[in-house]
Image (cartoon, rainbow, N blue to C red; front, side):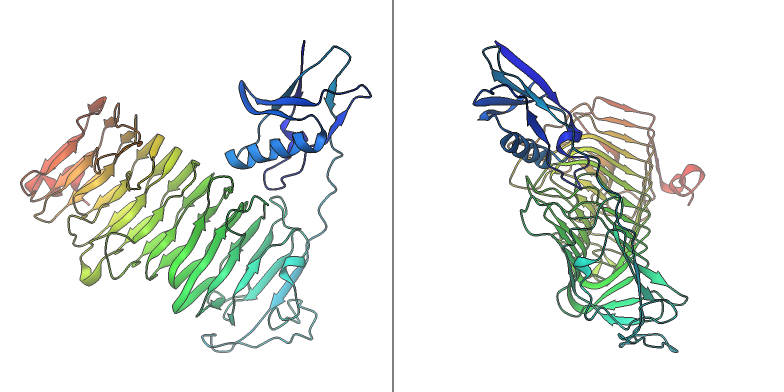
Length: 481
């Protein structure tokens, strides 16, 4: 007969950030040699060794690959004299009390009146150290804080891999005092880097608050998040002068979880303000300006995508100005998304150009890879887009997408479609468009070129309540700006 028992997610991992191993204890009775590991009604692994280490390893692999905790069962053939049970792990000890290290240095770019600290000091606010020489940031306790004096300047390139950091008690890099943001200069390489390519060993959390990361026109990346990094937050960061302001890379089996970028200013980076994303990604209330100044269709203001599934993405309340616009004419991307997404909200963003070629897309949620792509459970709502190229809202491979309450303006005598599905024809393996709901959008074209229209979406399920105004009507009433 079959014997089935339940393994709660807490027995495997209290959180993905901790990736704690399940504690699986056999009964005193003799166990079968193998069992089948089951999540819901899905068999994850057949005939795995029926012992604590093998079961815990299989659960870890499945949870890391999917990016979420789950409940599991292990089903074994049994003669009736065998049982198998899971013993809850002991509660984790409370994290150690965090410590604070105060720094003050006056490298090139420091504000007038900057006073350097001394590495012989205690590292308090009254007696700051100068820099992190002699301090291993990867040995700091959970909850530790490294504080940079406002008005100061440092040369920084730090690789983070601190096993003490947790989601509940992250290592924090932030500011203190008054004056300009602390200036972290990185003329070569990357200011903050995390993880290793393809690793399944989790790392995080880390918080970065109120710092200026400056590549000085030659640095590679302001931050590089990769390899199962958890709970990294950039809040109030300025990233400028790099190839890429913030770069997040994940692959199947090695997801970045809960990456947040908010209240930050990504500007004058040579390629992208940001490249990449992660599971549970948040990009909120940021300014994205003057990135990809040489233009072209391969770099963008932001390019959100990944080789792995991205579930739960939130891109809300951001402002995009003058990206991909050499000589004032945009010819590349502003907000571009490719890849596999499930659960995506794009809301309340503003994208504006003064001039644009047709290749300057506004919000581009499109299939463009050689591999399969889709955008499932996607909502694009309440965004404002002005003076872009071929389309304001450019969408493909997004079955059932909801597009509502957006405003698209074009004051130039050029071709533009407010909402276009598909903007790029889906390829083999991509999700087919169909069933889109397009409602209550406002499209204002002052002098539309031939072929311009409010909506072009032949596969849509519903197109209702949209307003299209042209000529003088495109600058008055609801179209007044």
